[in-house]
Image 1 (spheres, one colour):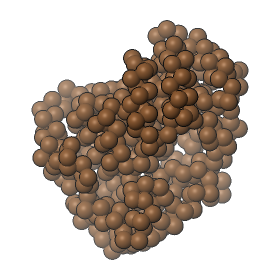
Image 2 (cartoon, rainbow, N blue to C red; image 1 turned 120 degrees about the vertical axis):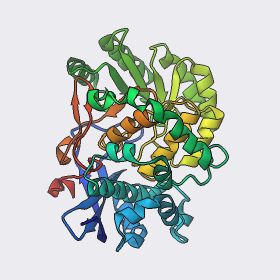
Image 3 (cartoon, rainbow, N blue to C red; image 1 turned 90 degrees about the vertical axis):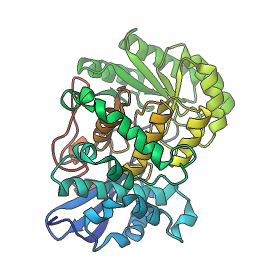
Image 4 (cartoon, rainbow, N blue to C red; image 1 turned 180 degrees about the vertical axis):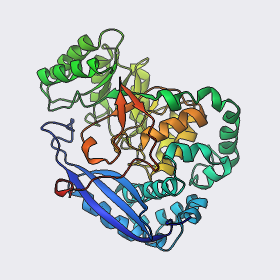
Length: 416
């Protein structure tokens, strides 16, 4: 297609100041939101834009990895790249020198996320459709060709992944109404760790007035009484019918997590998120058993599909918070979505992209895979920096209509 051959690649270290206290949690006390932006430049005006979330100075490392890993894409038409993107992505991930730094985690994996997301954005733009429409229009075999399912063969062989997709095709139309009505959301921005009680109250009441009925609160304070006091406050505002979630951001060791999650469970949250170190599957399994029927949610720092596979097999989580800016992009997110469908676990993404790409992905998950509708996280702090910011009204994401993955950003002096 005209304008779809990649001529050059640019990696941009974009950083954004946040309002005081915004983005803070138990471990990340003064974050600077940063996007590692990949620009795939073509001979025309059409560029693919991909992003991965980092915090502050680490962003420059990710951008350098983007420049190194994306070089094989230069000179290639996007249609040819995406026709076999599973192999292309595997080749980049298996770079003989850079794989040694992972494998499949950390700086290199975040760079792969930014690159992959740029490829999907360019593909959707080249076809003149939003990402969700591109995904739904793909034939099942073409979709799977864009995924790397290696190391998943023991739980999700190609034939079974194909069967999962084909089995849901006859009933797609029953679920397509969500493409008009939109996808419900929950508000994280009311409960950052650095906010005092009055700020949490003010923001929660405002969010409730705007139609939100689900709220997330950061926990893991040095003073445990503060967590319990804030949880009491938010439960009172949300009411008995409101939905609460608590997020510890890996603050506790296993023993602390077991004790503190028991105390928080009395507030009837839907889930407690990242109660301990994300690599400790054993501890997550133990916590899940103790706090049931309250659920464990995790995924923000689970680095790859192989780790997700093991969480699924051993029962370490109920809510799957896969993130296409923390995994190796949209393709790995979709591989995790297919696995989650097999294990009958709901996908509720963490939104390192501020919900821009994930608003497309949850629509695909609902229509094509018949995933349950829960909600998508909402964090508005970078809204003004996106060319086509996510549209939310009455607590619902409205399906985007512009071609691409909604990743184009306005980069000003503030964002460099």
